[in-house]
Length: 291
Image (cartoon, rainbow, N blue to C red; front, side, top):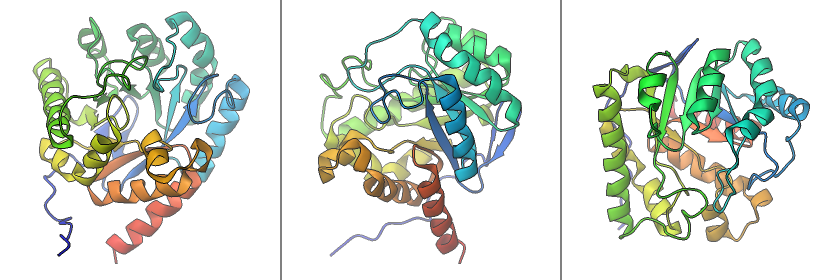
């Protein structure tokens, strides 16, 4: 006998996300469009590496329905080679300077404190940090700004994380992710961070096996017990390719399937590459939910 998914038991979360310039209403899920200003991203290597191309792409994502732009200058794909802060800023500085003029929420995808502070001084709204603000002095420095923050779980670091994924069964790995996010929330709140500045991300694909990623999606609703909005990024991830056999460029259909399942389990921000199609899927989901 199949078990029916209970969509009514989500723990109440704060219904808005406070960022540098905007209070984002999370009553309806939001789409975060990805802008990779990198030569080696797993999903679109080098396509938007030049600043003008990146800005044109960002403009198109907004036309396609993105509510937030997430701009990054370093690939965090498994096995990626790290760069330094100077090179990271060379890639994204011009893009950020222009994008913050557009009166839309701008997120910086970076774990380097130096880069984060430079971006915040430009007026960037959100710090999307795969290290969950664990860098030395990050909590102290970022506390002086009023930016939104996304705390993500990652096991290990990008260059090695898939060689040594989380130990344990999928259920044990899920518990580790949940405990980590709870710990980071507690640390930020104890340091005086306003709760409505914080959202959390379980880090699909960041140091986790295929089975652990699938378990995270299946049981994602349990993360709502932490009481913080969930940012979820399944777009084009390698687990989708492992399940379906699709190459990176052919993962739109499984990406949308995972997106809808994430919505059903309480996701509030959806980080995606294919904004137009994701926005259409979101509209259909909302129409059913509101009918």
